[in-house]
Length: 424
Ligand SMILES: *Cc1c(COP(=O)(O)O)cnc(C)c1O
Image (tube, rainbow, N blue to C red; front, side):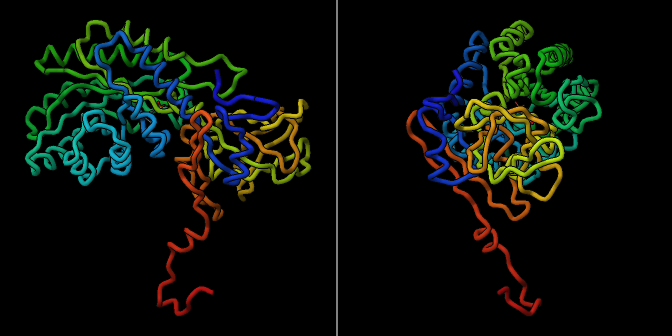
């Protein structure tokens, strides 16, 4: 069951009518369902239940709100972090350090030091030069850093180019063919201990085939490394499983399909498996609630101008992403329109030639599947406020990030004395 549903003609998140939230905190606002996140976390855990002690490390970058992290920490999830800031958030949410994986192609010495001092499960390294830096940092601290090597398996993830990470030309990972040489060289580096391999080929994957190919290549490489005398104890299979944005398209593989595939392919590997799901956990647990400012006539279809924009939800502009758009209180009539924001960019569009619920100025509209890679990518372009975030749990709801408006940003900025004049 979706945790966003119509009740008495009005869309609710769990037991809370969306207009109540809009009235209280204004629009645009991100609304998250805690129970939708929990349901996804449980579905994945269930799908992986025949594995021996898997670690599900939620990819924090998908939605780093501290209330979201706290919800997922309570489900026993760990964290996959890609910056010192995300590491701090994971710790603040109470995620145990032995469930924190540090990924990313550009970790700094400072971030390495921070995670080593605080504790973590492992660093996923993406180059030998990165391993050399970690070796120096860890040695200077008298520590040994547990590491996995992220391999680039050279598979086409079959998703949007900007969210594909596992092809040879992408910046991520070590070319899989170079892995034996890199692992051999790691032996001579003090302060780092090779624990295993990692892979992550991209996001919003709608087919298991590229994942299967990547996992199979990882399995062969694990066997080869063992034959060369390395002790391989973990295999991190990354994230990437897609969620359904468009209900008219076939659904992506379910957690159950994914779990069955992984269980079959990794049988006999004798490793601890790590997973890094992001979008799968939170994507459909959120929506962006916005109000129609006005309807402007257009050459072919009207423009529905809403008070959310590309600065709040970049995915359509950045990835040509399709998001379902619904009236919060549908009239049972349809219209075809372009749904756009107020930002001064032609790319500021949420939908083009979309047949959708008929809406009028003042209506509330829900832009669905905005739980992942949405609020976290928001910015203040056009001096727009940062939209607030609300978490719903049954009939409870709370503001988990207040709106940050121009007053706050203006207060942060300074006019240097040598400009000779204070702002009026
Ligand atoms: C972004 C990312 C993930 C999560 O990807 P999803 O598609 O959201 O599951 C996992 N691992 C790494 C290394 C990532 O960069």
